[in-house]
Structures are given as structure tokens and as C-alpha cells.
Image (cartoon, rainbow, N blue to C red):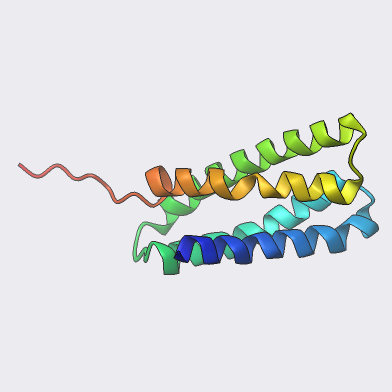
Length: 123
């Protein structure tokens, strides 16, 4: 539940930032990048501090989270490129589609890798 709330907040930040940036930048790709960077800050902070209650290991978790988030961003950029290349969707709809693919990817990777506690061997 917490992951979903943080994810919705980060997605809202992504969408609002991207849509505000789109007319100024003229490029859905640049707008997506700006939205991603804003959403990353919201997402990591919320997931680390609230969802997964991470008290230490932020350097490792933040690095892993960036790898996951950036991978999701690259995937969303491929989706955006495909949507734009198809010519069927306007910029705003292509951007919305690209943003929609990110939350599921991020959840799975965060749960299984980013915020997974260290497995310590105890004899």
C-alpha cells in the first residue's frame, strides 16, 4: 500500500513536471527526462524512508534505486520513441503511455533488490 502511495505521488510529479516542461522544451523526450529526475527524488525519499523504513545503507540503496529507476526510464523512453514513431498518438498521449510503464518495473526491482536487507551469514 505504501509503495503504491509513494509511486502515485512520484508519478504525479513526473506527469505534472513533464507536461509543464513539454510546451517550453518542445520535446517529449526532454520533458520525460525532466519529469523523471523530479520523480526520482520523490520516489527514493518516500520508498526509502516510509515504505521500506530504511535506517542505514542509503548509499547502497540510492545507487541501486538509481540503476532501477534509470533502467525504467530507458525503457519508458523506448516506449515513447515507439509511440512517436507510430504516428498514431500525439505528444501528450505518447508521454503518458511512456510514464505509465515505470511503476510496475520499479516495484518489482525495489522489492527484490534495492531495499532487500543484507543477507548476513551467521555461523
